[in-house]
Length: 316
Image 1: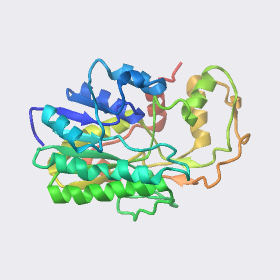
Image 2: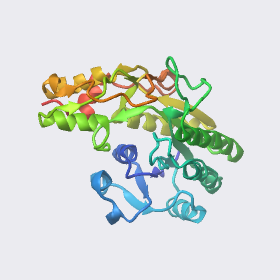
Image 3: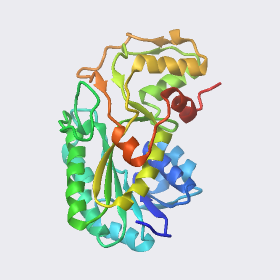
Image 4: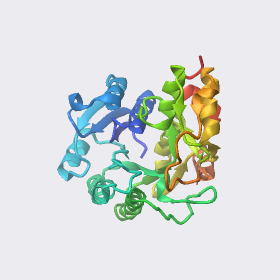
């Protein structure tokens, strides 16, 4: 993987994580090829905003990750040293109505196409997996834990990981899969809980919430990006490996939202806990073991309060 040609393809560049990865690699002197699926002018809302954040330092390329000829064209044109498969099918991922067929086709079905394209290309692969591959647990899950996903999206992502391992071994393509836990930061979907709370508190408005007693392993987006940069170097080891990228701890959402209020110097009474019923089937605990990443990658996430302030610029 050692080469003077520091070119990286990052698919799903208009997503929250994808945009930040584009920015992080560009700042580390990589030539970034930002993959997307629609004409840029067709994007609106948060995706359009993300595009504007990276447009001055990436090269955008429109292509379908399931199209073998399109992938071949990209590889022939740019000769990338690393391919980050961030794109995937996530629509209604937390819903029982998740389109499982589409999820398998895009998330897992694209993998054999990608690896066949990259064989003999001296290009490594980093794939964004998910903590949902593990399923519910009573403690911190490590990479050695047996995955037991309890959602269709989780099964599709696990199939992606298994397929990537098989293809990596078969074609000899160095590969790393990131089981990413729950990232937060600027330019996330404004309809998610944390951005909604921040917007309400900034405007001194109350917001109705569930009891928020569930505990979550939350990680700042800058820590996610620093992990991917470490993984880019780790591809020099060759082979296939799997890493949890997480904080290694779990905080009660109620406590985390109060940290936001404190950082904004907002009245915590605006957080109306218990006004909304907890979602049916809500998992009480999501927490990962990050000791492998810390040991093998020499990667260390920041303290949660620091990441919160830095990644959202909350300090008033």
